[in-house]
Length: 248
Image (cartoon, rainbow, N blue to C red):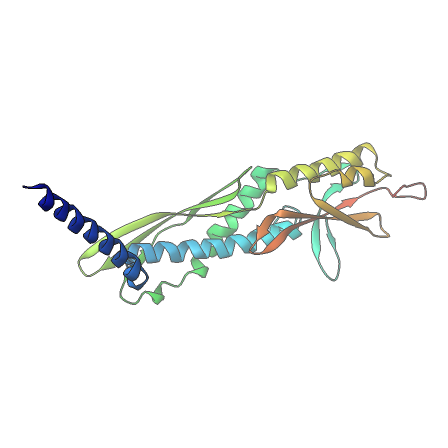
């Protein structure tokens, strides 16, 4: 092949490359991405986990306004507007452990998840549910609710089984519980004093209200913990010996 023919071939290849690149840029916005439809397995799994998320958010909200408990334990502080737990009561430290909170959260999810779901929204599927078992983990990463719920899903001659579901929540109860404990320990050491400087140095934004019977209600607002777009609130009451010589 002579030199002139070689040059011609290189020119043609270069033109083809330029045209190819131009075509890609011209049509790339017209090419729709390939979207694979969800399988029946994925649809059911997403649906159950959305219920875990809804039930978990509500349970965590209640646990927050009731001082680490979902079911209030006597004695507790009650007003016309809200009820919350005493975490310090005349010298007694009543702060629930993380294990206690995990147990209560797991229990309420196990009790309520079946009522949250309505498998009739999948009319082309036969879904046979088994027994629900829930495990909640609270650590530095937030809250994770893991559910084992055997579901036998049938359509025609095809049958599959799902059983592992979970949801995670950016709520840092481990830090909040440590702060509540530190406030209780402060008041055990100085039962007639509320140390405002000490409270300002804690992680959360903390406010408190005193009542005539010697009850102090604390509100911990943690902007890093979220339920949806809202910050997380943790309320609890302490019963102090606030007399005429008390300092607030």
